[in-house]
Image 1 (cartoon, one colour):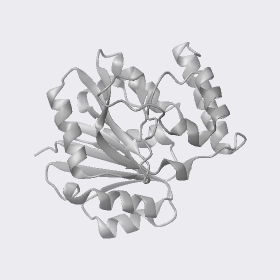
Image 2 (image 1 turned 45 degrees about the vertical axis):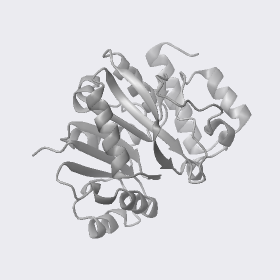
Image 3 (image 1 turned 60 degrees about the horizontal axis):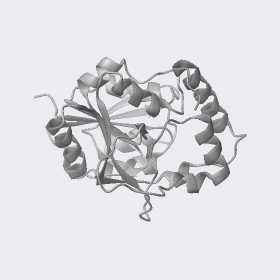
Image 4 (image 1 turned 90 degrees about the horizontal axis):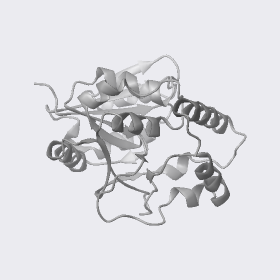
Length: 251
């Protein structure tokens, strides 16, 4: 029997966060109608060994080096066999019921090509994971406001909406939508690959939906940085430049 849901988690040298994420999923990993694929982007901290010991049911796809976010996720998504595919950051705390509710939502709404839940911090702050086009003005505004303020939602919808894009920390989509999109753009190492993928979904005539009635905890603050001269910031800016040129849009 092919699984109903394939969950793809990407990690790189984050053993403790990854184990916490997998533990939060409860019986999801052991169910016959589910599969969990861990893509390890060249970890050297024993992540793969620890996951294999505690969760032998998990399929581990170990990479020799860090492929980046888009390419790493594609490794797992191309290997996935489920009806519905989900990408989940390893710094999340989820549960199997939320994941199944996302899947049931897609079943009930064939016009939707991608759905994402509300993301909150461990302290309950709601992340601004439903966003407009990531243009230059928006990026400059985020820098001026500061990383933390720009990450927390100022206004939270109480019903589903269709934003321009949703963060890739937690997204679910039908397998055929992923195949038709051609996958995540691997020219984007780290950056707006989530916005780019949402655009590819809408190009198929499908909707991108943010569903605030379902929640996943996302420990996003631990990975943020305000250093615009860091290697990560430079990689992100390069990815944005590529994204703007690809879509011929800057604002």
